[in-house]
Image (cartoon, rainbow, N blue to C red; front, side, top):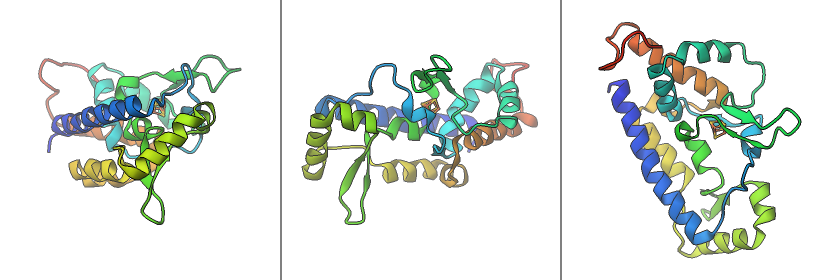
Length: 202
Ligand code: SF4
């Protein structure tokens, strides 16, 4: 499958997920706190390269892939490279610099569920939401156990790996996943013509 087709397939998966998340948010009233970027500052976020393929392809089309790859190669921190804090003093306040192209983990966390060892669905969300929206969180958790629809992590990761098993099932620290996604795009176009209408990009 061509890179462009893989990118479109991942984007389609994200489109469906975004709709499912939006429905869940409306029904549960759970929301991220405005301006909060705490989950992006976690030093141990893991992701697959495939979920960042649309991001890497977007960088490539805009001539920023090689520069970003060089930055990732010398990156010493494990905090996501795409995160922009509001200031050095307030690291937990900030935002994603490429929100539209964020990965699957970024979309699911907070509004997706995992199964516990008994097979029951548990909402995977952050401390900020659990504490600041305790009632809505408790109600949502109860409703999920009954009938409320919620995106399920394993279902989405399985669907992702059906697009490209290798790139969709290796789970790496996020900056390594970002790096591998860019390398995949650059390698693909190393010996192929650039996408239609694009010249001298990378
Ligand atoms: S890609 Fe964006 S949303 Fe995902 S962890 Fe990085 S900064 Fe956060």
